[in-house]
Image (cartoon, rainbow, N blue to C red; front, side):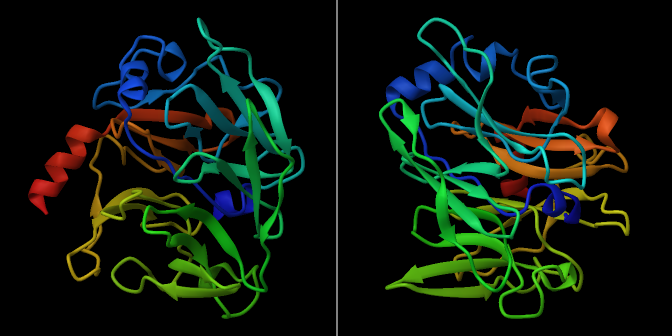
Length: 299
């Protein structure tokens, strides 16, 4: 949705799945900041733990082993000034305190192997940091094009997914943005719209792509003031996409801004930002694997 484009331009979220050690930690009571796991009813994630003088919003990211957590912060909606990414790391016996990882970048997204973090920049561009030991290198530009790049995310096939207007007009012409694939080969970058039924005549931006590209969760039914609902589409064998279907009334529970979709490394939980304004803007999470299986069967 357009709201998070203003605040958190571009990007992001890749993750991988399940080694035995990773699975053990993600199943432990210490996982997910020690928060009690939700059922099929939405709950605020990390209530009282994450926000300080500002607000939290955008996309969250957990590392493959579940022991690193990254999230976005801001001073205000519609204002990139004062934004950045914080990290919380599990330090052997307990989670540490939030620390600022980078400033003036947004929406941290892991590469599939977990060795890079992608970020969205103010100019609808993509930045990247490399893992070095227990830390990260200073972010450097990864993609800066004449066209916009939004919610940049990798997949296991090597194909990237992004919201983009390709060569169609200004980066600020939001009505031209589609859900797209992006490929990079020998320095050449190719953008292709995912077409119908995922894209509409208006702005199409916020989404989450499964690492195996089997499904995509999109922000849909957007209003003139950018409230939206979350819908899911499954990829067919011929690589076309099914007609998007609502994630249901427990997730789409009234008029609100919903963006920053992310599914946890173990596939169990859906995270996203939800709010009607700054005062009630929070990260939410909900049990997702059972809902996903139900929707697959219905599909």
